[in-house]
Length: 85
Image (cartoon, rainbow, N blue to C red):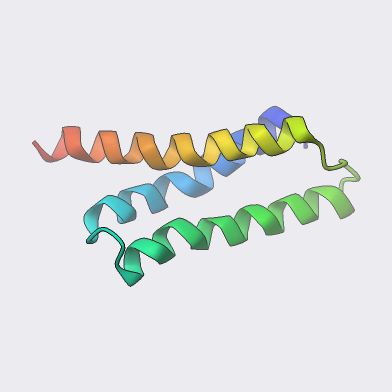
């Protein structure tokens, strides 16, 4: 799995949790879990990608995953606010 495929997968994993995040009160337990549950999946995915596919860790892939994660959370919040109106 290359960097772009990994970033797209991270985006797809984090996006539904972004919808959940905007529906719960800020800094509540549910808000905390909506941010951190997909992080566990991303870490697991990176480990699988490293040890099963032999794709090494790198700063480029880390930054792409970081950006994809936060863009998914942010975009889900924007879409939720737009659809809700």
